[in-house]
Length: 115
Length: 115
Image 1 (spheres, rainbow over the protein chains, first blue to last red):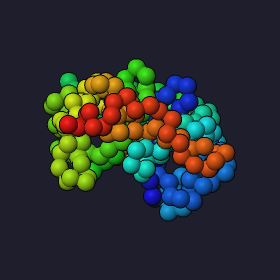
Image 2 (image 1 turned 180 degrees about the horizontal axis):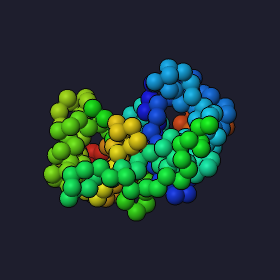
Image 3 (image 1 turned 60 degrees about the horizontal axis):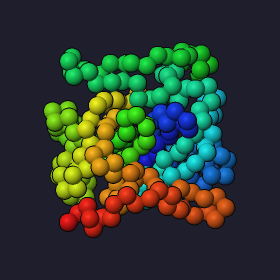
Image 4 (image 1 turned 90 degrees about the vertical axis):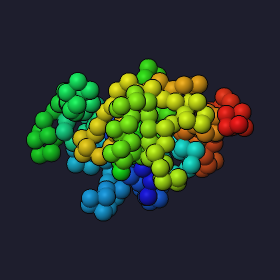
């Protein structure tokens, strides 16, 4: 099981973080779309299978220790996050208030995404 | 313990992947430079303490599940990887040969970095 970072081709925005096992990586290569291992559901998860927000994979990178994968993708619907935002990393640490603040807009309400 | 992605401010290149515990995050905030938890050495690791390749932290992001951290950093020496490369993600999957190929240059030999 390896950590996977999904990065948007072009903008280079980091969209999300997930996990893959060997089978998920093989299916990602074969399909040309991101297939992760869902740790909560304990099964393969073809990202976008419910929401339609699939990730077309353009490039697959591996790190120096060969235990972390980086995908360069285009994001269907411009929405990677289940909250309806472009990126899952929408909370920013504000040092003044010492708190996390949501700084990116909801592009589509989750109720509309998961009908 | 949470996964951490270090992303370069400006280029948005993903430089490396590491881990933090609560103490590492607190020290990162206090110092303004990336402090990770080294899983191999089982201690806090102020990135660059040996190599000089510190990471100045400009922004700290948290994902939707609040269990993955994204740092936006500037990278001293332009080198994040212990192999002397800009990014740790220098191996690219080549579908023709079904192999991983190093596609980014070594900017400085590791022998020169870790004297």
